[in-house]
Amino acid sequence: MDRRTFIRSACQACAALAVVPAVATLEGCASGKGTSYSVNDGALAIPLAGLTPGVNIIRAKGLDHTLLLDKRSDGTIVALALNCPHKNGPVKFKDGEGLKCEWHGSTFDGDGKVTKGPSKQDLKRYPTTVEGDMLRVNVG
Image (tube, rainbow, N blue to C red; front, side, top):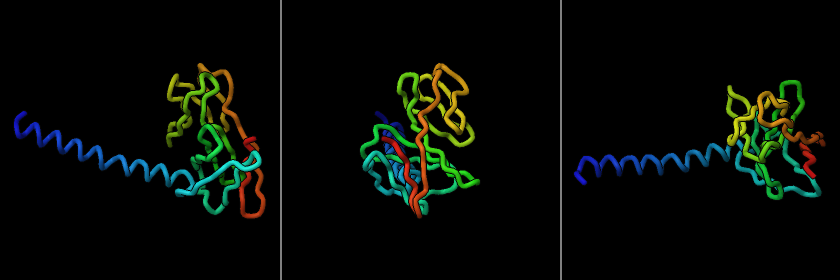
């Protein structure tokens, strides 16, 4: 290997390592500012102050999938399971693109309704209630 190839490879490796912590940090910010959540008695309790307007991605101990919370301007909060009913693939939210299954391309609207198959079922939607300054998401 010549010097130029070695330096280029080393720079690419360093750049890749620099990106990994940044991605983990951004994902942590999007999931409740790094807060740890757990399912207790079939529900998640999430402080309303920790939710930003729009989409919030939540991971919780005791829940086998990621949860999307959409805090809307009218005050309602929609909670959706981010796993596709078609083959249980991961559904990702991308700003400007909406909700899309990473495996087979099914798409869903902001209420979790199928807009394009192969999925024939909507995303699972969980009931939410506000109790004081906490949001309760009934996942059980």
